[in-house]
Image 1 (tube, rainbow, N blue to C red):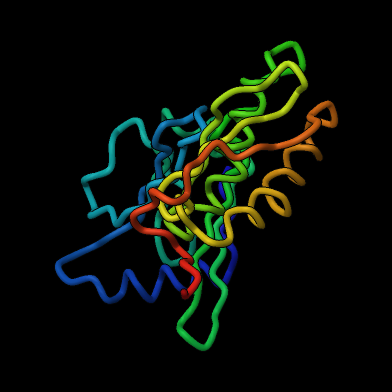
Image 2 (cartoon, helix red, strand yellow):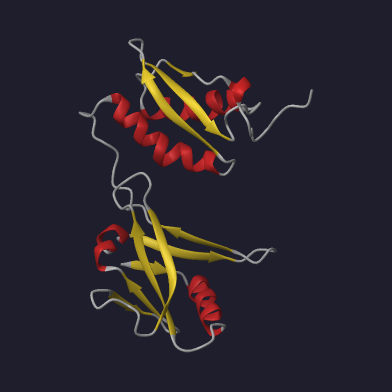
Length: 196
């Protein structure tokens, strides 16, 4: 069901040893499954606080309790820990939790919105930004509006052409252009503001 690499198992074992007051395991569930906003919730689980319906996966140093309603969404999931100079990075990959892109019979706007939410906005979120679909013209031009740290950002045009347009055209060759409908002069907290 869920693969936990040996390095991640060692990492969890060390964390669990540091917990005071008893026997702990881990519990994982999926929040907003089947939507672009889906995510994994991984928490310490004191012994006896797991749910009776949870699936228990035993590892050498701990137990992982998988929420029963989340189990199907976590198929092919993996957890890894990569050590680095600052300590390390825990990564949870769960390719099925967001469901799948709408089929080719769905409207282009629905398919574009899906890619924006699942591929583009997670990257923009690192800069406190996001983009939303305003519409698609008769000429198959996708019209977007930037928000958050992207609203007023001096690099928005580069992000639009080199990142977003390339990604969207890669998925949907019928798109002729990607346009920005944002009035960037009104941005209040841009991620990058060029100096005057």
